[in-house]
Length: 83
Image 1 (cartoon, helix red, strand yellow):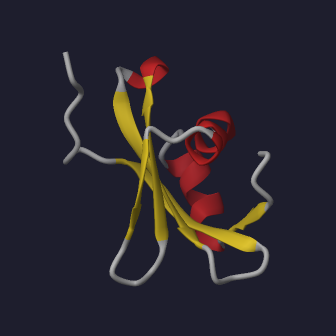
Image 2 (image 1 turned 180 degrees about the horizontal axis):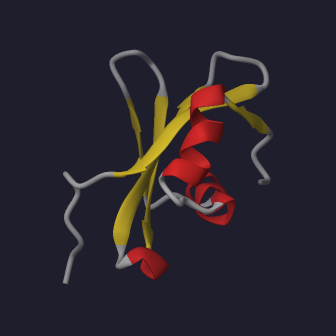
């Protein structure tokens, strides 16, 4: 990943449990389709992943932690693929 960050324990567990590739997480961080800031000030990086049916991967990052910490990531079913 170009963005210098670390994975939380939860995020490390989710890599295998949710079958999410590190490459996809990297893609979301380095070239997101959009970003959002949550109520808790965590930054959300959102990226469509064509290899996963175009579903949107949401990567949640705590930017206040040094180094930046990836809190979690998941395919967000609330975001619809545009066809």
